[in-house]
Image (cartoon, rainbow, N blue to C red; front, side, top):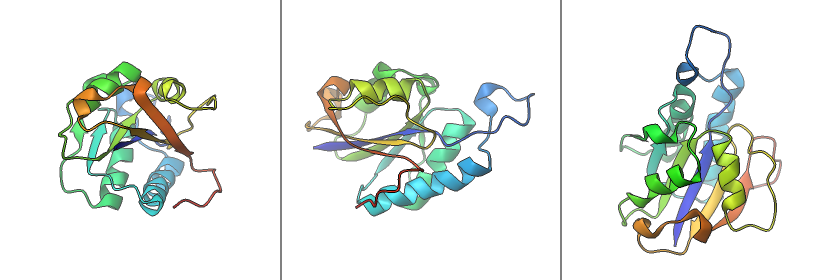
Length: 167
């Protein structure tokens, strides 16, 4: 069984209009929510071993908060196609993961994350994955090359304003 955290980047800043979309940093709420959600995932019991991110600054900085919370020494893997990627791009990124890794956190953007949420085998429709929202997925596979969104199950949906206890 492989586990995947599909994470939408934390809230970004629009204060410097000279920055390109890829260059936008996290705003104060994003800087607060990224470590908060990383800590909730640790508390939840998910043992992330690898982090893959879009190259956008806001996604990468969100990934850094998870890297810190999980004390992962390996560098964050950057995949350019995750910048505004769709579910097939997430599949592509995961299909190349080493089979010894059992849990991956992958960071991207809307609308792709919300599209992905609704392609995972789930009994409910998710209208919008908010910033720093985490989709907890599972795939009953031994080899990442066999990963497919269609064969994966949404086990949980965590987000900053969710008041449920995790773990």
